[in-house]
Length: 478
Image 1 (cartoon, rainbow, N blue to C red):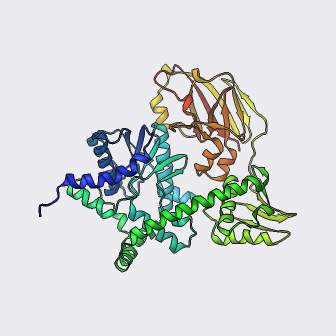
Image 2: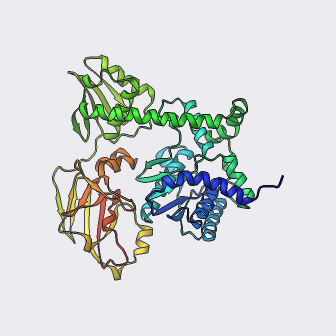
């Protein structure tokens, strides 16, 4: 039999990826490709570049690389490799270095968790700053299976069985995964048949990390014992996603009628609306209440949700929950109270004049007008932090107002394709509770300019035609 050539494997892998990519990239003009230098992301970049060259995809691609600075010269070598790969594929590239070790120490996280959080945050910022509608990552079917096994080992409900989602909103960025139908072995075979080189990360073989231990030690044993295990877990993931969507919809319907009080730090529900609620839907109701209160769910376990559910049978009781939440029941209601002591935003609005500095809740906000010819825009964009933004002065209508968020607030985040509710955007951004609570609106008489200090509006970003720039800068009051 004649051996199969590289083009044949390119066709097989390309068709599998194209089937998902066409749906994920529909209406998308520009995609950030998250490329680490490993086989998975390198193969994704090659295949998508080939599909674009063939006219089967129309969107533009930008290569994004996050240097975690964990392996010294090897990490820098990965960055150099990705730079060269992007150049060979004719794609622009952006690389950012982050200190995972320092972040892990500051936030008291494992290196794995700190690396994941910093990587996702950095990619979301890259996408916004380079006008990309979404971020494509190279998660594949084996990653999906390993994620489900990992969650089963820790203990999980049906939501955890969803595994890796094809689309998710994380830290304000839209992440898509066009390779979930592809096995790791197919990717490696494809790279070898097409003489595609990639970088080997030695840390991926370190079984001290839980994920690596599952991949290299547990999964081979399970796959040898259970035929088609990875495909079966992928089918389980799809079924769980369908079930999750139905439960989530039911929970939203219940919340529409159950909420009798909704304040930034307190939500109160009528117990009567929850009495016939199945336990899994009750879980989604509570989960969404916590999200509305801007409380992170990382420290919540099945034990906590069961304890909250048990309050339904009591006339008067209260519980202390993670995130400084007090849950109580009395007089036919179930209440959730955020006890965090934080500076609050004022209920009224403040006008911000050019050349002025004003106080707004926990913030000092200053504003100045700059001449485009007298500033270095590229350097500003490279070095700025989230507490300062530049706006095209000619796109601002009337006075600038500072105010708290209101129901119905909508804006178009920079780099996004369409508008979003400001509240939903802050939830999807997965910020810490205090940052969300102290985020506020900077607006002109027509539109939102900035959900500060998180993301500015695409409508007022500076462009090559910008002549005058309004700078708004924040500083935290002690």
